[in-house]
Image 1 (cartoon, rainbow, N blue to C red):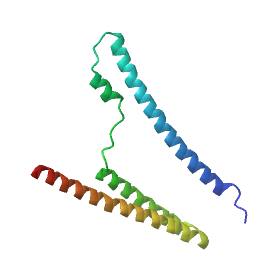
Image 2 (cartoon, rainbow, N blue to C red):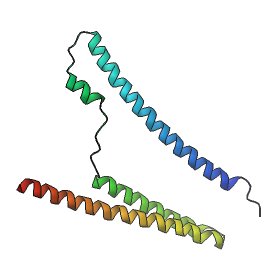
Image 3 (cartoon, rainbow, N blue to C red):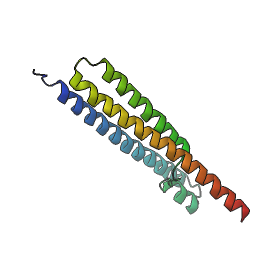
Length: 137
């Protein structure tokens, strides 16, 4: 029962895709920063006054806003959907040896999604409580 290169190709393709996404993010950030610096340089060359606070605001990295409940909810929904997809895929496989591991992967992904949804609810409740305490003070 020789499967050939197929299973390895899937793993290699997954890691190459992951690497491409990371590199694309790095390139996008680099280009955005370069465009901002070109804008500042063009303004200086044309004699426009440049406020140091504006330069600091444009060149600093965006601050992490913390956990955003909507992002956690989206991650949870996508993880649950992916888990359900894996479970459906597992039910269509012909080999009994392959069904249970794929369904197990789907269950793990679905559980992670449920964890994201619970986290979103917890973060949303804590942010609401902190806003109420801040307005009461």
